[in-house]
Length: 219
View 1 (cartoon, rainbow, N blue to C red):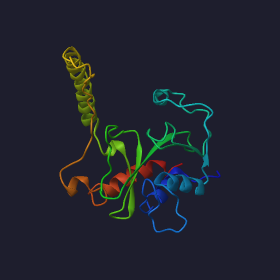
View 2: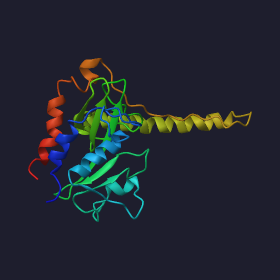
View 3: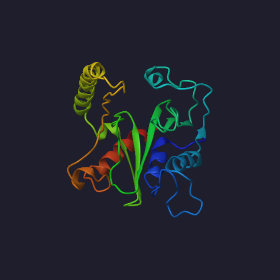
């Protein structure tokens, strides 16, 4: 095998310094320009090759049992759904597993911002912070529980229905012809102080890193 096991890749990722989303800030003279570029460079150092898709991926494709079955093991796709889509990478491991990897970075916080996309329980996340100049790796399923995810999903669905009813009323009252409407945008945040939100001092940090790495150690 000319490429490293995913466990080795993940251990190297976990040792990465801080990178901005837009410019290198690691102190390395020849550092890659972005956090995503730094991760791609590390994958290549471990023997993984860039796989250029000959077709456009759609989010719904990822639910198919044949998703990226043509992708060779030991390769990765960067920005599979575009620069604003997640995840940032799909990696094909030695056992034919497709690993979705999302890069997060912050110059001012010790926890990532998930925004409207929420925490995807199936993703592996790489988060680095300028505050600690370090990186931590974790799975989404170790951040949010299925019960929490379901509550949020149900609430978003209900809110969309409420917004639809509200917009019908707004349209009926639009005597100025300005098209006033309401758009509900979910925002997934974390709160409760550093005990809950600091990913680098959290009591479960080492546990979650090992949960991300250890299952791949047998490859």
